[in-house]
Image (cartoon, rainbow, N blue to C red):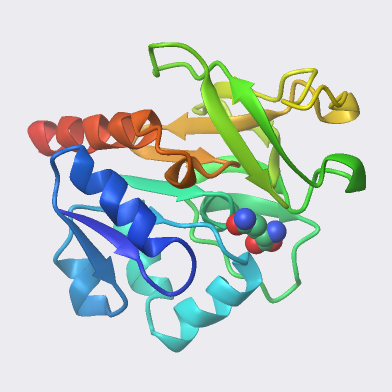
Length: 208
Ligand code: GLN
């Protein structure tokens, strides 16, 4: 059973994508609901707001503990920011869940390519490039030794805009059972990133 953190963001779309992979998806708002799931999707939204809501709903420490204990987690956009061990351009009181040994830069793309789409080759996802929708997204600035970079920003966006200094920045990463993307696969109808996560969840359940 995969939980979708339901404090903010595209909860329904992520739940639908998980269900399409053949796993049960349930919303998570309370510690007891977190206890009941085998894995968690953390949707996009606004990471400072989500950080505050995690504290209000008393989910911050339980979630940190589950992630530290090896629960599979997938964070999209703000979800990636929350999973990162360190943030650049965050708010000083913004809390981290950990799980991904990366430094993430929040709102990293300059004004010119603030929100854009691009086709990305994602390692672990077969069948051609993934259409990636970036919405005031973060990028990964540095990765620790245990982190695999699965995709980077191409030189050109879908509209032909030069990505400039953003080109080559990691935007999909994996560390063991933790997956994160800067972009939003839940809104494109392409379920392959969720299918990758569902495969990771099945793998982790089989190993337990
Ligand atoms: N810019 C947002 C943040 O700082 C993330 C945007 C998103 O999740 N689409 O949290």
